[in-house]
Image (tube, rainbow, N blue to C red):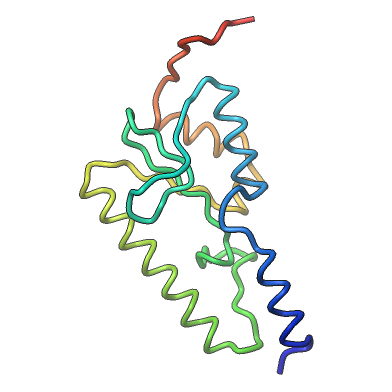
Length: 143
């Protein structure tokens, strides 16, 4: 049994963002500051959060809960446990399928996890930069 009303639960869930999350904005800002240019709205399978078309790199910034990361942030709620177990399991299976599709199309896939970004932002950013390669500094002056 849920502890809050159905209307309040609906309102709470409607406030959960699927794009332009604080983590996504933080990563985008850091990559831009390093000289990387990217695309946001992609028609690629899975609709990656950030795409580097020239480098053929698709970047996903995943919330640990919604994508069942397995860390302390990804516990299954006790209320409606069966519903959530199925939903989150389907999300995880879809992620695997999408990653396979992108790799088959010749794209490199990088997944950043909420907990890792929060705990070790610099390390995760360095991991992304290593996969992408050097930034083109066209139009960017070194100060």
